[in-house]
Length: 435
Picture 1 (tube, rainbow, N blue to C red):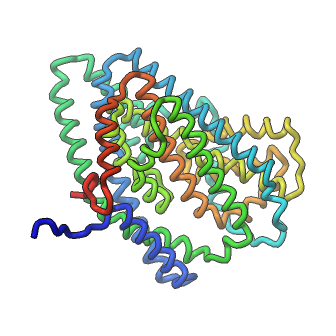
Picture 2: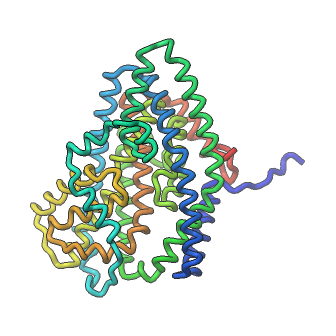
Picture 3: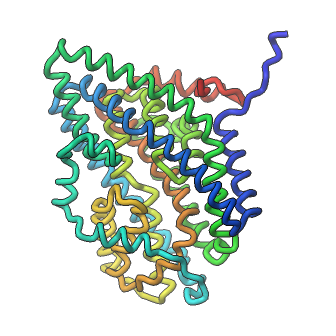
């Protein structure tokens, strides 16, 4: 009788079912305020559960990882490599978006004045508050004056800064620091267990978040801008499979292996449009994928703020889309200026709520596009945000492998065994069963 095993849906399939049900509920309850409020609250509760566990995992994993590295020179080298890699990939993403927009001219396919605008007042307020944030303000903001205040506000970069120094301090005191390492390792194991419990709620959270997005917006809002959405998603797919695929091959591994390992996280990030939703599992998985824990714990939280490939593609496409829609001709010089402005602005806005849209607000005026133009694409921002979040997550996972291999801190045998587990799983939750 033991040969008959009960069939169990994987977490990925459960999330997909939640996604489909969310679409159905969104269509059924279009403009139904009671249903919208209910789904909004359920979705917010799920995101809050994720936010609850993110910072304890980042602090414990990063501190233990940095303590294991121990060498401040090595850490500096890893940090410099990481930031250079992020800047290069983001630049390639912006350039790809601009090339696609110049070839396909999505803005010429619509009458901009026939579109209905959406409210962007929340983005305008955020843009005004972030407008005066320059390079020095950004750098000063990384250093926490009160680490507990940074933890309470969920400000990632000061927490990373403190954790790095705390980890180096533990390494410097040697034997006396072991008790702290053991304590933080226990914290990290506890938080990974809590993460697995929280993941049980992912399908419900996904259903609610998708449902509320469609119930507020409606399918009809997508139709006039459908071509732009299709081009944006196609460009993101090209970036992942071609650009990231080439990078993976340069470092002697297959991008499809990586995608198979993090497929559930991609689906979850896509469905919730939240990188935070997958950050705990990404740290756990990339460590098991073979990259040194210290590098994983440093690269993924840093990439969460600075490595926004999907956002970069969207920003360059949207800027040229609006310019074309308004009949504004952009010379090569204008487009190079746009490239530089996007590169600088996107880093200055890192960590700002609704950052991708705020970057566009701060950018489009440099190419002569009216600010009101953004009201016409604000309605589809949530749909596009799902795709760019998924690309950002893939980009961060790729970065950990690239940096790990460049530092000879990658365990090939461990990686092959972990990948093999996913290749052999067909329909049964063996590798990442929430328990």
